[in-house]
Amino acid sequence: MKAVARRRLMLAGLLAPLLLPASPAAWAQSPPPVNGPAEVVAEIPGTRLLGRGTLRFMGLRVYDGRLWVGAAAPGADWQVVPLALELQYLRNLKGGLIAERSLKEMRRQGEIDEVSAERWLGNMKQLFPDVGPGDRITGVNLPGVGARFFVNGQLRGEVREPEFARYFFGIWLSPRTSEPAMREQLLGLGATRSNP
Image (cartoon, rainbow, N blue to C red; front, side, top):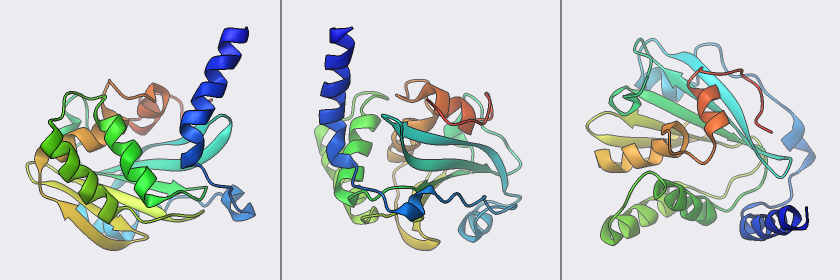
């Protein structure tokens, strides 16, 4: 029992810098648009919601995620399908820390050489601003091209490297994800409930 408590405290210490206090507005839940956010509808014809889930850390809700697809639903080959991952934040988070955590999670998918890792980290630090409750970052997978990013519906930029997109979206969609329950929810494989 003491070992479990020690591990939880250690994990809290490692991830606590990512979380800033949430405002009361963070607890308000807005339903997703029926046909998808405007930026997703413009990027993916026939947009539809495939799945949704909520990321929690030590009981705190961090963000709601929604996976939007077109006519082709992703399966094991999700990286070759146009899709959009919309994250609506429920807490205040620093953009630089989002980028650093993203790179760490990307490394779970496979080995990334240091030159690519540094370049991708720099790209993400430019793409991901500080966010607060209600802010949305939407990443669009462009098969064979890379990824395009929107912040609150406005184009922020893109990374034109297919390998980047594979590793980035793999944070949530790869079998190697650190959040398998959320992966199942996003891909519509499991119940659409919040992960514990």
